[in-house]
Length: 94
Image (tube, helix red, strand yellow):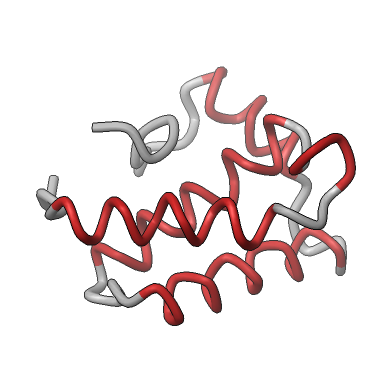
């Protein structure tokens, strides 16, 4: 696992909040936020660590959900079943 520095983690946290701010229920449901957070972790591990870049990655994750490319609840069920072999964690916490 690639260790992310504190600035990157802070940028990921801010990006998650900024991207989810407009969602219903004060920032979206748990499954949606988790999916976006996982995409932010993936982006950061690929070297995309700026706030703007992470926000773009988060918006792309929301677009995937909106377009029906992915259902965050289905992703959650696959994680729980253990079929997701490339887990990146449950969110942004260390």
